[in-house]
Length: 340
Ligand code: ZN
Image (cartoon, rainbow, N blue to C red; front, top):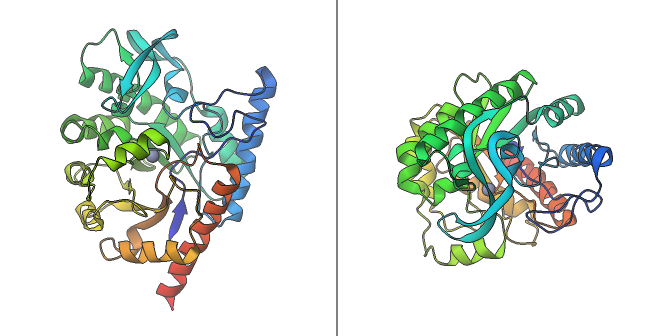
């Protein structure tokens, strides 16, 4: 009854990349690396299917990081001379590439893995791209001198790739915008507009993932400063409700997000985070079903999609596998109870 899907990333196996890291180094090189990326993709496709998920992703096995996987293919960016920059309002420092010239996209970014995903599952497939505002917050601008202009320049290129992904047979294109939870008024002001530019003209389902980040220490510490109630979504959800984007994700289980904020997404499909990515404790199917049932007070049954709170990339593989199974079983349990 309920669709089930992951936010996007899954842990890379040790034969592909360093484990337990957000920016892992690849293990093989050259042709062996290209092969290993697809082998890992196939492994996760099958594990998602076995877990009973209804919408399958590539687990982002072919990119080192969810933002730079796209950005490293864009002309006008200097990856040779990275600089340290505070990102997400200085929550952490990262070595980021620099925008040094007008941006352009020559050719495809994710054609290989999108077509591979399409070939290896009969279920609906979702593909993730970073959102324009989050990209702007993860590169150093030395050329445009204006965050909005830079965001729209990226949005045009994202749109180019998104249209091609749709032609590859992708059913759902999701843009990841964790920056929306950091720059809330800017997100409502121009972030959503830039996102719509990235999704312009798509006939497939469009989605946006907004979260409080991976379960890394900097994010755990940041969440402790956000108080009893996390109301960041309250500022951007009304703008998203009016937008052309069809699905919106939010963190739910173990978060301090007031559940009634989901009601601000009237008319949208809501991807409810029922799996905590900041804890290795595996949810029981009962807990997942309870989270779904709680969300149903604010989201109509036909519009609820059970999802993970965020990507599972930095987790241990065994834990991620168990969490996928909990997601599938819990959604099945909630569905069976509704049907009963
Ligand atoms: Zn996330």
